[in-house]
Length: 233
Image (cartoon, rainbow, N blue to C red; front, side, top):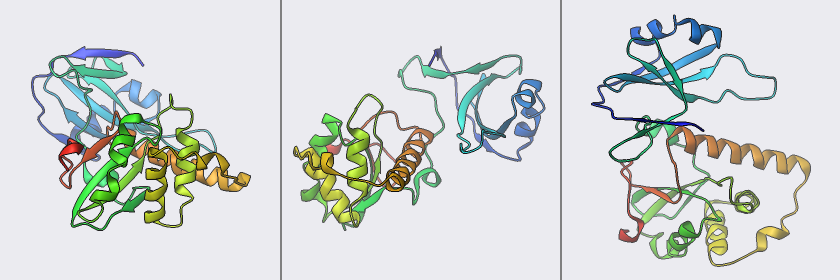
């Protein structure tokens, strides 16, 4: 996807649906002609970051929100990603708990401290963290989001095997087993309906991660959604 480089002066506020600014942006012909429903807008000082979704999708498909930009004079709409020139990070909406709450694949551990983990079971960096999860499960409760990346050919089959676990503890054990070299996932046999249901779950998990702004794995967050350097746990 094409990227644009921007130097943004400040972040003022995030506006949700039914705000007067969103109502104003909804009057733009390009928004109306492309049948986009605006969900929220963030004022970045000299440009608006906008999250919207199509009002109509082909039968059998779900509406998938996406981000784009409109200049303050409302003369230019920019599709694609933007990168902060200073930090080189992608411009996105701040993650909010409502984006991920209750949407995890499973919960592993019984500790008092909550940790959010976005992981690709084939990711070598994720595996290093997952190998130590058994030593941390009494201190932390891990809310785990499977986020198979497209360039890892076995990530989806691995995720299916994990999700076939009977509960969070077994799903966690399967994730850890893969990290330690297990190839048991290759023996998983599914009916077409089971495979369809698991793919729907995985697609939903991917959408949760993408919409929350997760851009790599492992992404480890504390209870306040601050990024955590996992070796410090």
